[in-house]
Image (tube, rainbow, N blue to C red; front, side, top):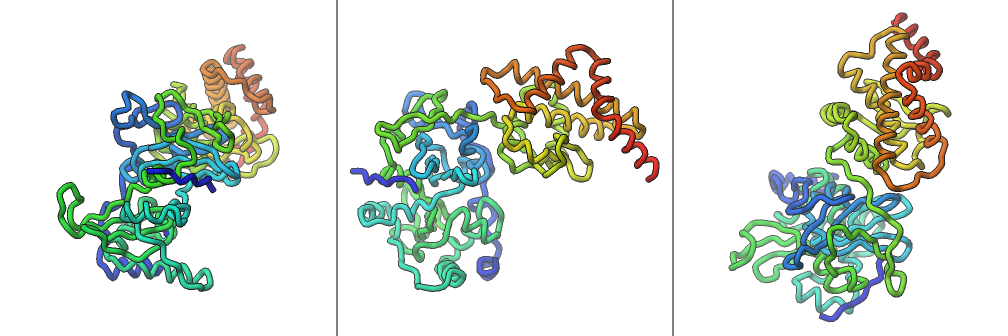
Length: 441
């Protein structure tokens, strides 16, 4: 939980509810997952801050740290969350945070996951009450003392404003899915309250305004909008004023506010993929982003995106790095989860070449066809490794996989015949077995 520093100046129930109200509001809160008015930077996107003369805030993915940018896009990007409005920081328990205009993103180091923090629960303290009231945020109600399964149903029963309930159900993650609605908004902390030209309801993570009266400068009557909760948190409780100071686009430090004064952590920005791949693993996404910078992989990556090729980790026997199967996609040995993205990218390049050959009808059926395919994949793997090593200025940990990739690149440098010999040595047995199985079938 972040330290709060007062400053001066929450599927059956909801599905039934939505049905009773008619069709869900198309598009309400369901935004395109692309940032608005953002400049691409290493690790993510940069948002210029008003009149700050080119300064602003970037939201990024970090190596061995929070994938804030990935989560930002998953939750709807700037169209839903608004732009970044703070620098990222590390607080108690090693949790990392970053504010957008309408939410507080929180990264847990134990499960390597970024979610939306319970911002309005964090602000549920007496010293913030008057300021929240001045910003038209209803006071939190005390829920009845009930068992957990009944307590949630009781809180959801507070969704009595039709438009707010529809928008709650129509969350940016999965339309009409109750768990996804709670993941995004949290549970209600208040009932809907009429405050001036709108009805507003407070949730654990967000607040929703339903505009019911036309006023100059207000929202259209009938619209439901997310309150700028991130701005509220920034103004009332940001742990350190340094975090609210706009920075240049190339400044990527994550501050550790547990220190006095705060100091930069050793987290560095990760590469970000420009395409959307069929994998949920952050490490694999980072490796795929690296492959986008190596031209020989372009065709395979385009095919992978077009076919939504599944890519994931899976337990495999020792000695097997990865595999491609037309029915199951690419599977990478679970034992490689601790590897750096660069050698992992080289492994993916090998399997993506098999996928590319499959799509082009070049795999064949006999043992020699199999060996030829493995030689092509080894060459692609080596070319990718060489390109990635040449493009990086970081030193890699000395692991078995790094030694394997280094050796394969050395063999490739000796020429085509050397690669073919390596393919026969590594894959002759499996290619002969595969040819026999194909012949039997």
